[in-house]
Length: 236
Ligand SMILES: [Mn+2]
Image (tube, rainbow, N blue to C red):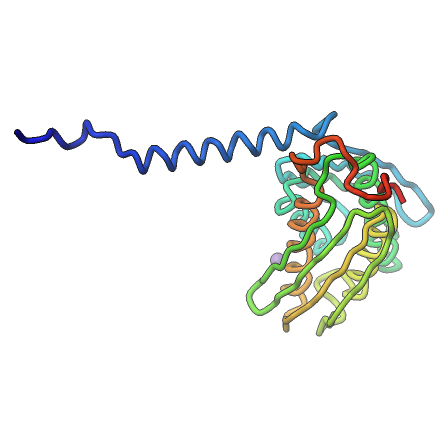
């Protein structure tokens, strides 16, 4: 007797793949819910004679960015941070751009780092460490970070061929990350493996930073509610 076959038969392999995908999705939801008080967010306003800044950061966001710093390339990089870090980033800055871009870039880094520190709180239940290597065409950059509470910036093999990228002074990229690491208490190492185009190198750096930061901020379901430190705190 012939065995019935055709469209009525269940494709068990496909069904298994569907169920595996559903389990992965639910695990992701559970992981996000294990950080209490979420979505984690912070706002800072900072006004000096050099800049007037408002920053809003939602760590558990959707990648939305609204950046108006007056430095177009910096806005483009903040967009990378939001998109690849899956954070919502709002930055409004009126800076003394008639002098140069220095105070604006530095102070955005300071305020964003303050928001990061505020949003992370006591850092209980997070993964703490993050590492990502991002290519952008010929450029290849790794970012390794630890939300340790201690500020450190290491730049390895860092070389930008041009003095400017649009309206951004390339010297200010290092300064931005130094400011952000200082106020957020982050140990940050940036390694440039390759790159000839300054726009590519810096964009790869921001993408790698965003992905590494996202990983470090995410919940560790096996360590829920516990500060991931033998010392017992990661405040500094
Ligand atoms: Mn670009």
